[in-house]
Image: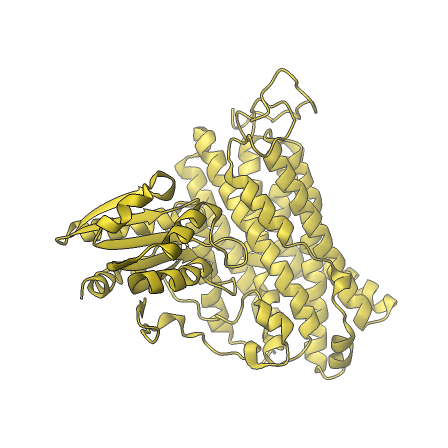
Length: 347
Length: 141
């Protein structure tokens, strides 16, 4: 079964129930009633995704246009390379999520894949918007072409692309599982060198409008990685044939491979950025991967460790509203310490 | 002495933490009961010696929908004779890590004897298990 291609189902099957019998190979009418779901928690997830809605043009880039001149040549180059590299990653996500949408047989999952696909399109636009605010058109185009021909970027993208293409060519449940794990690698591991760089600039009060957009993107990507990890867990419990030692090993192997490729990319792209310690960033990636393993219901794949770079996180409302204050300061938050200043103990 | 452990969970993270606490209490002289919030009979709460609330966090640091009836009940009911704890799971990449725990602090500090809070990142790790003796000590001291 898990190696037989999935069929695209007809749009409407009036004799089948609205509440689907499975996320793949299920029976479903095709009519979505959010109050009659096999997995009701998907409605909350859908709501959260929608409440994240934003668009690039809401963010005025004027401050960043001024700040751009204060960046060093190295910072400018890294900024542009990371920007187009992230754009390349997000370009893959919009069509891939739509591809998956064609084969899932639960209407609520179809709707969520549609929203994710839309959000990836917004991300894509935001990278173009950032570039168009900062550099002339011919340089923008050159930068996008550069991303296409960068051998390190290609090597890491290829690792994802192969699994995406495999599903496109042969849409079996097994290939869908591999696509989903690769999507977690893309959204949950590959973005973080970029996030580190932009938040690092923000901690020095530089390019805050860009990092505001990056923060919106991170918030979206976190929901996507969470959804896909839930999708994988449901897929494996509905299709016990997928729940094999070999596939668990596949998860460990591919996430660890993604971490290695991210370390390799970070070693190139972040090596001249003062203030980001690469050894620390490598540990950060392992902490990050551990979170992905646990989200998938597995044990940590790396030794347990604390977050060595707690400043890489989504901005709070206070940070968004008051970008001049010290909210961005690069300091460890004190959450690991026990405090009882409020009259109770905080562990 | 009896403890009521009330929780909600989607991914199983909060449930796992609450089960850890349940097992730890079972090793002590406290008799714990683990109850999903949808199965809770609110009127039984004043009869317990300990109340432990476990919740995940949703959206922008929000209390999950199914926990709101409990939140309102705790805001309005005098449980100052009950020693309490708030337990949460969440993700540190969000600005309001385990925000639902912080939301429960105000009503539970005013209306019960709030002793301790515990925040856990996703599925519990060894460092979280290591905190259990301190959690119980804070509740019972």
